[in-house]
Length: 79
Image (cartoon, rainbow, N blue to C red; front, side, top):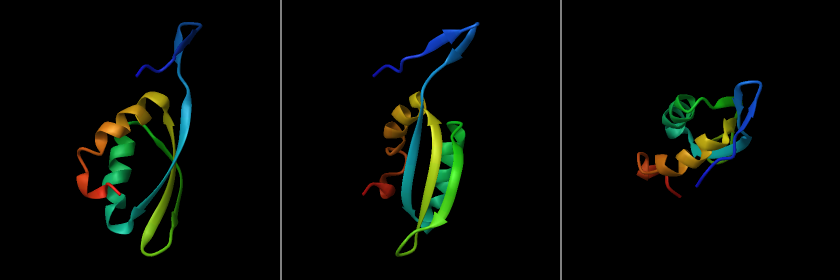
């Protein structure tokens, strides 16, 4: 998979995506760490239902592609 980038005045630009993730409260820390390492920007963190948390992030498109691979590091988070 390839992410489309654009060069403007010598700067590289690529699209952003919004990710909304519902995760059990005990797994919020590892998920926040993982998204922070990929330079995700947390936009919101609220309590969900049944001991879950809802996080909303803005991520560059290439980071969301790599998130698919990150589930291999957190197999217990797979639904």
